[in-house]
Amino acid sequence: MAIILNHTIVPARDKEAAARWFAQIFGLRYDGPKGHFAPVKVNSELTLLFDKDEGFRSSHYAFHVSDEEFDKIFGRVKDEGVAFGSAPGRFTDGQLNDWNGGRGVYFKSPDGHVLELMTASQ
Image (tube, rainbow, N blue to C red; front, top):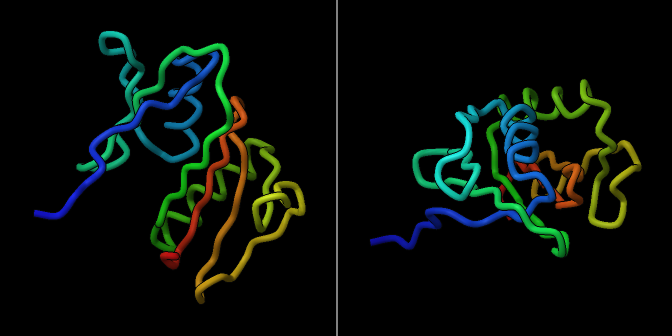
């Protein structure tokens, strides 16, 4: 059996606001809190469990997406006025990268987490 990441906890100052923002940008559903967490199902295998936390460090979440998904998500990033860039450390250069023959972009969530989209796997 393949090892599959099922869920991970994403710390946030406001777990519901963070879950709503993420779901909106990624074109996913957020159905409200469930128990202690504010879950967003990314796909059939992975759920992000947003959780309230006051003292956390920024984390990096990278998503391999199709060209069509990239266009839709990146369009919402631009529509929301979220700064984006081509690499870690260049979050605001307004450029995409073409690493591994695909397209890639980095941007930050309102809580400061680094989000990466890529059309070619690393």
